[in-house]
Image (cartoon, rainbow, N blue to C red; front, side, top):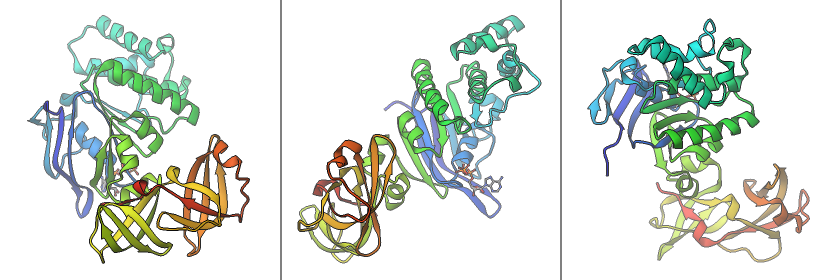
Length: 359
Ligand SMILES: Nc1ncnc2c1ncn2[C@@H]1O[C@H](COP(=O)(O)OP(=O)(O)OP(=O)(O)O)[C@@H](O)[C@H]1O
């Protein structure tokens, strides 16, 4: 294993009695695209600000290439940050905004700075706007200027705090594609904070799921999607139905749980009598008219709503105890069933996809 470019070692940040980051351990490899994701207030932004040097940890150590940098000020770290609000200077034109960081760093003539700024503006497709004022730009163009300003420093690490959240959905997808392309072309490390799961999964090499100032799971998007490490992660990702119960049988890598919706089987192991929660991915559930017997890998209920979002349809089915399962299907897969609100349906799934969540 090569040495990580950035290491957070038992990093903590408290503001008096308030804990923003309880404990973060994280090693980031060179060229990685790392996305920090979690509910509001979980400490994502604080973690990013600690990396930028804008906050000092109250305990633990931050290392860059193995060298402690807790006490290194932001301007000596060369890890620029790009914000949702762009943080551009309204009194400088586009090109001068991009030149600003270069000027602060020093060591370049005015001509060199200008050339570098134009190179980056060109790379981001807005060189022709070099003389415009910031107020004459759209949100997407402002975000490009902010990116050009950070990238003109040619940093090893770029920090991004919800950079696309102020943009409309269409532009967000486009900028997402551009960020992904820039990341692979430049070969630098991106540490990116977002609320948006689709953004995290589309961009990240690894996603860090945080809650209450701690890391809940670190993994490739697919891994997190298919194998959430805890009930918290499964609920947060929202791709699976999670049912809690008590283990009543255990043998050969499978367990049976007594749950409010009946006895359900799951793969994994847990001692008899222990509490546990099983997770059933919504896209692995088959829907058919009710009537056939249900067993440990099926339940029956009544269709309550159908959310149509284009090719994918989400069905919400109410079970006998009043709880709901949701099922995700391609539109063409359910057309033949001609379901209506109130129709009784049977939901079933392959046993290997019903897994007991780690404790
Ligand atoms: N300067 C501060 N003083 C006191 N508490 C703070 C300060 N900055 C952050 N916090 C608290 O630390 C916690 C983590 O904040 P942080 O901004 O890192 O969360 P976040 O995950 O980025 O949230 P969001 O998604 O809402 O931006 C929050 O409970 C917040 O109120």
